[in-house]
Image (cartoon, rainbow, N blue to C red; front, side, top):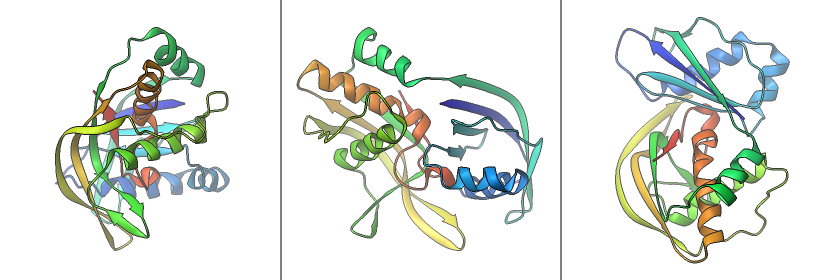
Length: 221
């Protein structure tokens, strides 16, 4: 998995919905076959903040110098590029063997985040929704360390600082949230280690739905 980060420059007011429109502009700028592959690839995610565009992918991608967001009449210029790569084995070695596990993990949701349950968007996260989302995303990527029938009964939200935030795409307004959640893990060391690994993968996978479209951008602290 590669994470590519660009400094960005533009004139005008920032909108979280830039994420959807830069996604669309990017797909229009590349080969149609690759664009279709990325559109259907659950491992491709991206999000945009006021200062950065972050892309996570398993593919080798080329980028333009700028992308025009017609919805906002804004040109997003790409600046300095930073790239890092992580493998499944490296993640497993780090969190299952080498690194001292943490009982408290803070997730910061940088772009509007939500889940879908019983056909409805969820405005407030629960530990179950967060961990099940991240586990599903991990299992989509993992080949050797798949977490089958994993239940997170020894995890709860211990602190939060959230606010509601709209994400708009295709004329639809999706109610989500941004801010911070702290998860607390207890029980066996093996469960805590797995929790650390799955949560850290949120840096690459995002959290919740529509992570390819710019929602769910997450960093772990």
